[in-house]
Image 1 (cartoon, rainbow, N blue to C red):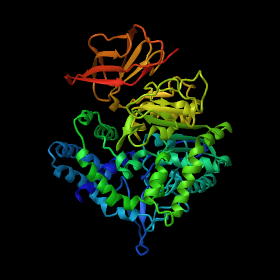
Image 2: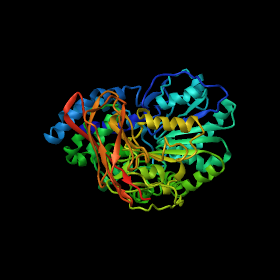
Image 3: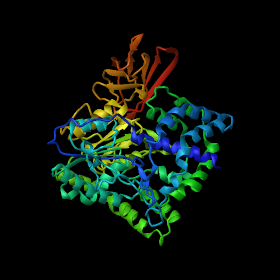
Image 4: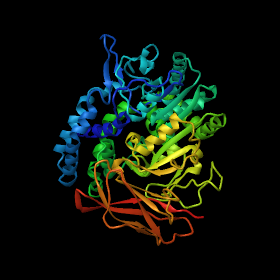
Length: 578
């Protein structure tokens, strides 16, 4: 059984590590009269340290990058994929175990220090360090520590002189994290001499911003808030780990997720159609129950990440009402007070003049629970509040109009899977179809969108700039190709079609474009060659249905380095009614 501990941990680390995608150290270049920005990291990204009460220095018991885990993941990815192949087809697990052990063994002995007691308090003296209460790392310009930031954070830092990172124990529940964030914002205001801050949160950090705004937003300390894939409504990921009936390993998604994180254009996703990890399901579940659950069972963050639909059932199964009373009380407040009213609260703050924006990814199944539209980690419905069809299914027009009932607004996604009229913020939520969790830096479209929201005040809603509509396709190099109709963007219309080669490395030759469910013909000249980043506009002729209909578009192409291999990408899109 021990051999599978490493397998499980390596997968978990790979799924979490992208949240701390590392970049180069930067220096402040912004003007010192700019308002400060407070940035909130995602789940598991903050270093945690154990104090034994004797040693002069604290022992680091959790870290995603400094201990070389990311380097080990990268170095052992080919070995892991080869081991996966042998395990599934040959039922030989030696190579997979070797790769997993090389990645995960260094953290196995330390993870027990992360255990929390039934009341939700830490079993050991574990905390972030240095603490932000009395240390100068409040501001990067004052910090003596190395601060590594990826692209979006560098953009913030180059624009603003004061960019502060809220560092907290990610095991804690949302009510406590929101309280700590309020304290932190007061310190930032005092340190910067400004009356307001801009908040930018990713994943769990976005969840904390939402909780903070619910309880403290009326104080007027926040000028603007941008939430990138916030885990507001949690994720079915932990629910699947606790409920065997929900658990399902999505091999193809795992491969694509790893490639996206590695910024790879290798495209091994076809393995997902051949490989099944069903034989390993019980082993992985056993490891979760025997080794991971005792550590994470009483994390407040775990319970606040469980969606409302699963919370009562799993709480009754795993938490004792008496010994877990403080933990239950806090998580009950989040599920019964915050979640039912978070959309109403965010809209009220907007009405008072606070710009709030949400960016949500969709179009992929969850890594370990394939029934839900997601970015691999977070359910799209829980991120945005939208009505979202189960993965592989579509909604039927018209949309619900539960929050936005304006009939002139189009809130149905091109894939017909997302009804954004039901979002927490229908007019201020942007969706990126096909993007995986934490990949905004590698996607120039999403990167530009976030910079626009953070650094400018012109993107007041999803209609303000045609370059940033409510729905768009992911455009990282791993996405291979992108399409856009001149009159309707991601939606199908009888207008010119622009096809773009998204690869940063490969030259492609288009061989054809088909539009299912219509009589449209896309004229593709022979030998249409696109170098990396190059686009071509193709003439479209024919007619489209007069009623809303799902009409996927497929682009066929080859890469010039391997012209005998035919590739295709199908875009989940549709024709809208008049």
